Length: 304
Length: 304
Image 1 (tube, rainbow over the protein chains, first blue to last red):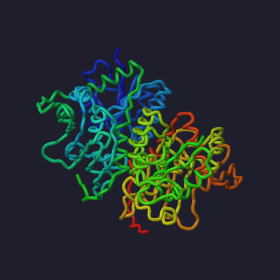
Image 2 (cartoon, chains in turn cyan, yellow; image 1 turned 45 degrees about the horizontal axis):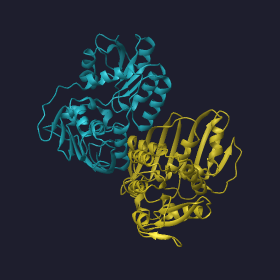
Image 3 (cartoon, each protein chain N blue to C red; image 1 turned 180 degrees about the vertical axis):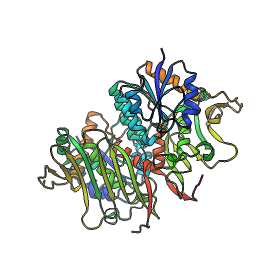
Image 4 (cartoon, rainbow over the protein chains, first blue to last red; image 1 turned 90 degrees about the vertical axis):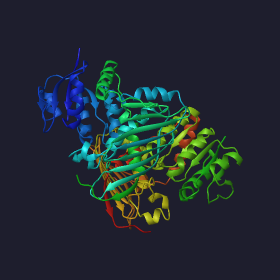
């Protein structure tokens, strides 16, 4: 029998990804939505999670898709109400929030899934399997996209806690921490801050443990680049197109269909069935280290 | 029988605190030191930890007191050599380092002690005991000192990863996380960066979980302030002078003698005897969150 789901924070990511994935899901039955200023046709709609829980149809789980700055309070409310919780990435505005949510979910006996949608990209699982059998010598991440195209009007990404370019780059870090056999550590970072913004528009990271680099840039026009290139003694393992295309030892792979959010909700259902949680803080921890260690460079103002 | 200790990174904190505490310790026998450009009279001195381990007298443990930016590599070297490791605060330049050190120490079967010297201040243990029996309603931290007086010529504190004012403020956070009954979470932070520095000279933090505030400021002349004030329904619990003076319910306590580093080394000896580690990341995690969430305000240049 399908799990009854409520979705909170109806924005671009929900309409583009969550709703189509849920429409095709046999695991979840989406019955309600909560959003300050949006509604979803055919659902019971509410202004807030509190109203959904108080007046709405019964739900077993909630997917929290609002900006990270306000996600923690909603997650604590849902956990206190005994609901299983899916968090869009990043799982919190800070690491201490994630640690507290973990403890609260465990105490309440509900499932907490801090989701990283890029880990469900079509090539990631096979890349992980391959790299577990190889001797990795290094990696290079390039995650370059046009913020005007992908984040139109999302003011929160520029506010403190909005992460700026790391809102995208953390997807690459979620793939790297998933596929690389061994711990990653941030050694150095350079953060480019537009003079009129509280969050960086570009970043260059250097890693230790497994030596590697990452370049995140939101000023990319023309071709958009979301690549994780891993060098091994046996040959290169290359993920492109956000992880949907896997090329091994120079043999160009084919782009596979995007099933990220289908896989994400399938994993959520498995976690609930097993009464387990999955809240890996490593991608956010690397981002926090990038801000903690970061050399800050102010550049020209950015205007949409 | 005393544990043979080597000390690495002979700077102000070692001469002011570690050497006197070790001279009075029955648990440790300080036999060697390593420093690029300093020596300790009466010890076998080396330029590097590697040289100490290769050519020096046998040691059971090392105390790593160099700046955080270079502490990780030394800690991994010491762990690989099977030595118990004491880390001065902060335990690393970033949180991913601390997680990796924990795993490495556990795998090697050695003790890792990420020390927080302020937790051994004379009033802290009693404050913790009192607060465990009270209903805490909030707290306010004021940690204000003159950087010119306490950190003369320490260029590394201003570099990326040097933490700036958080190098002092993290001591207050190590006390707060030790004595407060319940999790702390960073809600917001304002960071004041001198135009010519890579690290903040002052910060204002707002906490959730237990509601509270912290003001860190390195521009404090005149009286120096290191206070943690906790409000409870039963009355105020006030730690002043860096935790050495405890005042309860308005009754002014007396400043007790400073035994921070004596207590720190006594705890290290107990950990080694029990084959345990103690590497609490919470103070550094709150600092990382302060940088991650921080609103950055540029102020006039700072010159010593």
